[in-house]
Length: 138
Image (cartoon, rainbow, N blue to C red; front, side, top):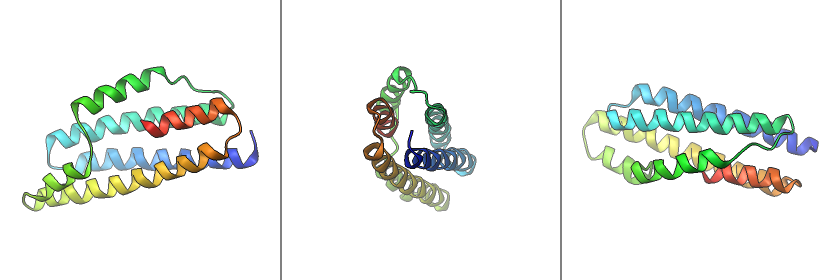
């Protein structure tokens, strides 16, 4: 692994840690019980991404099979989107706070996704690129 690839993975590791922390923190702050559950689920998914990045940092190509099934099930059951944030905004102050938290999470996810775009194109090992692409799609 090149030094640049190593640094990109270190960045992704930090990004995943921030995502986990935000999902966990915001799950305790939102008022809607379904949002609490959804945010906790996403925190677990981000933990799986962090585990994959950690494997890559030591030169291993992570296994990608299980996460994809979980991700497809989550998409069918619940979806985190601007619509969810808009629905939260239609209520009172508690819903408005939920909407602000969701908008922050959405911006964070967009930033992290663009960082994965960069990392995918910088990696020379096709298996590592595929693993990064898989994480990004989840």
